[in-house]
Length: 144
Image (cartoon, rainbow, N blue to C red; front, side):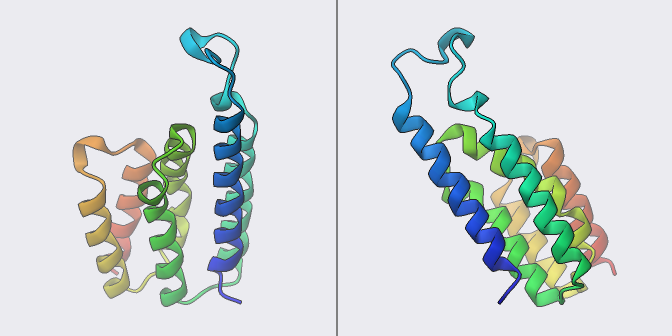
């Protein structure tokens, strides 16, 4: 099984959960900070924690550059593939910072390819701190 399988499964479960939260939202819930809403559900923190555990486990397995590239491309593309609901979109971007240790496993050519796609997808003035961290790791990896 590829390293991507468990991560893809986690993402699919998370997206399904956030979509269900949006469908179950009551009218007015979360407006003006009242009544919580989907953004306050513990699924967001749980997703990030479980992803971090998965990525640490993958890192310990010492995957090859090709496997890491496939994994990073999936993680980095996820916010574009799932722009809704917004609560998931922001979380999917925020977890990019967790990928920095994996980026170090890329060979320079794979790192360059992933980086090129990343800078096209996430424009400089829109990047979150976590995305800047991921990009810095890709820059280091492409330089060898």
